[in-house]
Length: 68
Image 1 (cartoon, rainbow, N blue to C red):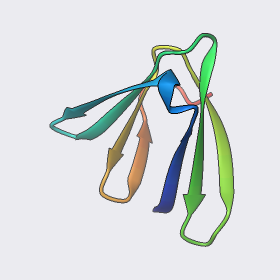
Image 2 (image 1 turned 135 degrees about the vertical axis):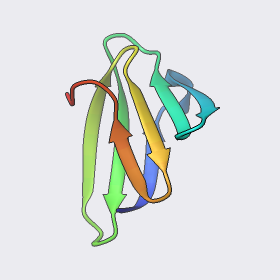
Image 3 (image 1 turned 90 degrees about the vertical axis):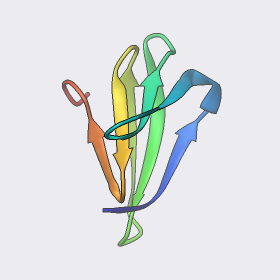
């Protein structure tokens, strides 16, 4: 579960809504950055490779494909 999700440089992401939640696709080469703050306050920076998709459903973030 997470509290906040930040897309570093939001222009590097394309957003769409699917049946599983909100889909964010990384459109920057070689990767886009994502910061997830969990409910205990810790923050993690993820580098999501280009063309990889992240799905946000309720309070859960799913990385489709391999996690970088």
